Every structure is written in C-alpha cells, then in structure tokens.
Length: 201
Picture 1 (spheres, helix red, strand yellow):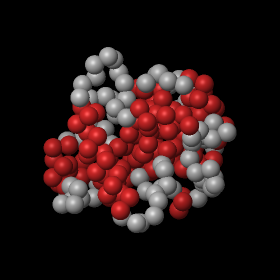
Picture 2 (cartoon, rainbow, N blue to C red):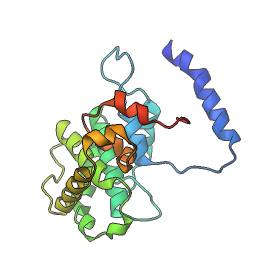
Picture 3 (cartoon, rainbow, N blue to C red):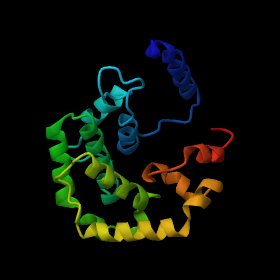
Picture 4 (cartoon, rainbow, N blue to C red):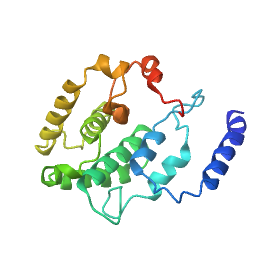
C-alpha cells in the first residue's frame, strides 16, 4: 500500500528531472550506499532496505579490483570512501559476503594511498564522513577493516581540528560548512538542524 501511494510522487519527480534538460548526473556509489542503508518504513518481516534498487545498483557496479567509484579516474579518496560505504551498506543487510570481502581486500591493499594523495584533491567533508563510516563498519562488526592503519591517523587529526573550529551548538544555530557532511556527524539534534534548511528544500 505504501509503495502504491509513493508511485505517483516517484513518477512526478522522474518527469521533473527529465524536463530539466540539464544533462545527466553521474551515479555516486557513496550516495547510493547511504540511501541503501535506509531501513524499510514499518519494518514488517525483519530488517530490509527501503530502496532495494540501490542495493542492486551496488552489486552491479563493483569494479574488477573489488572497489567502487569512478572507473575512469583513480583517486584514493574517491575509491576508499565509495568502497567502504558500499561494504557497509551490504554488511548492514547481510548481503553479498564475497563482494564485501573483495571490497575489504581492496581497502587493505590500498589504504596506504591515503597518505600519499594530494590533500588538495580531498573531497569536501571527507575527513568527517570517512571516520564516521569506519565507526559504522566497526558497529556492524566488520572485523577485516584495517582500523589501525597509520594512513588514517592524519584523517582523524584533521577531523578533530575541523570539529573544534565549529562548536556543535553553533552548528545547530547557523549554517556552516559542516552541513555538507551531516551524514558523518553522530548524535545531531535534527529538530534544530531542520530550521537551517533552505526555503527551496
């Protein structure tokens, strides 16, 4: 019944996007993985994803080396965060253990690249979102992630510096750059944060 009610809205959004004539937006494994982690509303028969098509997309788009991300351009930041997000999403629903294992193997073999990557090419919010994903992996019981890898230390240090610059209370009162990385922030007061939403949504 819920899906039947949502379908007209889904069709309306699709029609709006088709009519924009702004070209295509490339798919994002990271964003898709976050949507894949949304649990089914109402639950019912156990834990299931609300949007199973996102899980199928993740399964269908793993790269031959076990990672997820931009196949045309290798960026350690891109590949590491996309891969960990997809592993976390699949692990959350206890799906595709072989794909998760391949992703974790890629992370093990390439974690050192984070220390070698140019800081200027780090995506906005990486130092907030990546540690949050690592904690989510730990909470889900992912044991094969290299939690103590030395390349992670500078990322954790950068996270602390950024979080100290913007006090949590201020983040809830005025728009700050941290709004770009809310998925990486635990224990937020969403009632207050929603007051910062722009009038266009």
